Length: 239
Image (cartoon, rainbow, N blue to C red; front, side, top):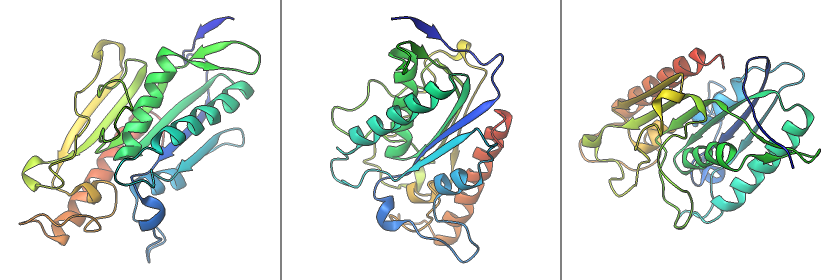
């Protein structure tokens, strides 16, 4: 079996994987302005495509306590990428996720770099990831994942996290260990915002209500975080 490490010197196509936060199948809703209460969902819908380019959105894990359906989502994403890369292995891969969905796409990136993807012609490719966008990624599934660092096969990575003083879901294990090898990346950025965990995912005041926080502050912080993420994505040529 042949192995190939993919670069993007001659690639033009794009493929997007978007994985939302836990329980999104239940709380996701369309708003009066036509947008959704999910930054990941809006990112997915507004992601531009040419005829040959692909994108797919996954709801986050439904099992709120354990998140064990994370493993099934991970498997589906890899299978999706296997099919798409078999059609055209020269595609830029972009990944975006919130909460557990953020950690899923981080681990997808890691698998692409370490194990690679087996294609239909028998070859295995280890593609680099063009952009990895994380909205407050959390490692909250027992036995899932290898590390909390951004893997070094990612060219551009951005992580929007909450300010600790907000006090939103302090028991969450935010995946905040930074890049694995900064020298192998083109850009890495992380920033902290005055918003709740739900607000960082695009649903301000839809989750917990920390003492001292207000819906107005959460709404503003949520919008600022998403604007920052979109600007980081534009640097990577996503928008």
